[in-house]
Amino acid sequence: MKHINLIAAASIALLASSSVVLAEDCNAAGTVGTGGSASAGGTSASSVGTAGTCRTGTTSSIGSGGSAATIDGKAQSKTHVNDNGDKLKAQTKAQAVDKGTFSKSRTKTSTDGSSLESTTRTMSHVPGEKPVKNTTNQKIILPEQ
Image (cartoon, rainbow, N blue to C red):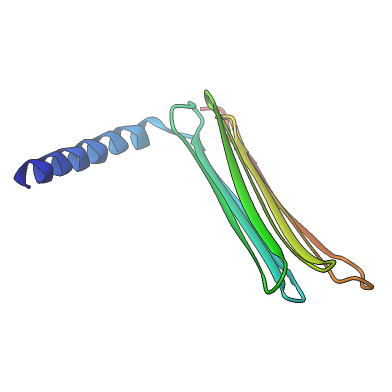
């Protein structure tokens, strides 16, 4: 048990010391995030995404997630994250359907080391009524260092 505690303490010390160095080396950093939810009848769906980066491209993070629920229908949510060097992309889709009534939410988030973007689109619909739609978008272009 003492061996595990020693490894944990050493890991925490290493993480704490390396994060301070990265923060000092970054003169241009940013974060974005969007999220949204929709509901109609007995359905609901939500999604959220967030990303952060340092202009040098040495430090980037991304996260996304969602959920969907329904009383009697089908609900699903899925998230995909793609890491391609300094380019990160994440997409979450959540949808709930119950006999023609539905709610859905989709969030796309990305960073390429020099810009960040996140967009969430939601929609809900009850048959015979006008669909309710919403879009939230955030985009940041980081200045040159």
